[in-house]
Length: 204
Image (tube, one colour):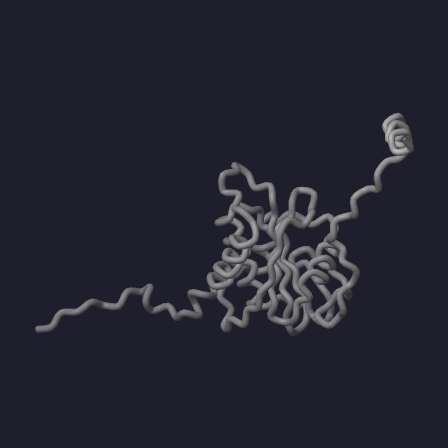
């Protein structure tokens, strides 16, 4: 007589079925309450100028409440098939490298956005759904608000789930002027009592 174990029902699921649960459909993403970018084109232009992404390049960026760029990182990912769990781990690794976590805050104040440059047109793909899942999960684990997911193709850029986009920059365009650079410091003020004192002191 021999003894054995009947295979569990969980074991019968294929890896593709499991990974299929690690993606978000556009309707799920739109219903998740993702905060809207006030000026998405400025964010896209700045990240494109800073990282110059090519197809299969992901750019994750952290914005402060005023949408100023605090940190960003880019990396290539040729994962096939698309797996949200693997994308989550890659994003979390980059976030841990470039910016401290906000896990001690009761509510997140910084927002992570993801720009993904890829081949094809602007229509949603399963790969996009896996990136969405990965971004949402990585933000939760790092104490950030989950922000916009943006695709960059030869057709232009598009904020998925919002219907906002533009033709430039695109996957083939040259970088535009650096939009996220900080403004130069204001020139020193002249005039007034302090300036008169300094001028008289220098003349002596």
